[in-house]
Image (cartoon, rainbow, N blue to C red; front, side, top):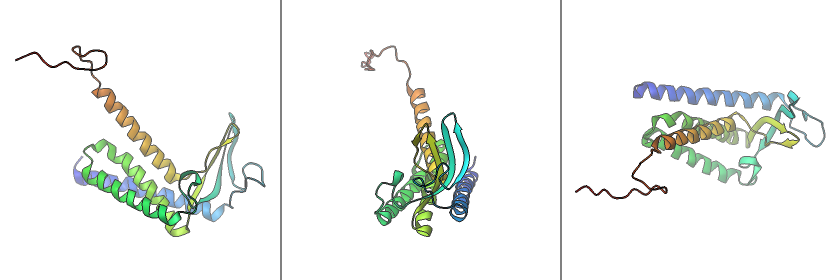
Length: 188
């Protein structure tokens, strides 16, 4: 794939994921009431997708977050916004100009797009909008959104790529001892 086609493909991935994230958050913010876990039974004022499917409940709920992941640092919205924007800039620089591995560009674009989606939430709404709520065998999983899902997929994809790369690089050397030490060559 030529550089021009590759750039067009990456831009298409970016805009598609961002559009899905923005539209899903707008729909949830417009049509669902704020999640009320202490007052109502499942689905807590949201839209039930399934209940007790092998012990798992899933619903769409409106939940907001002014902090970082899992609601930590809820009073640091502005600081977190600047940190996120800085990380996005560094990831873009690395992905588009410094990254020697073209296979990792799409997972990095997933991560960048998710981060951009959450930054846009903070700029437009003053908080991040979350919507996917799972109860796993009686335990609440933190509510998340499309952007968070793509950040997770990007990180998981990068981990898989690195594991595959490490597996390919691990070759058997009959001249090495069991701890991987390669003795110097005796050839003159």
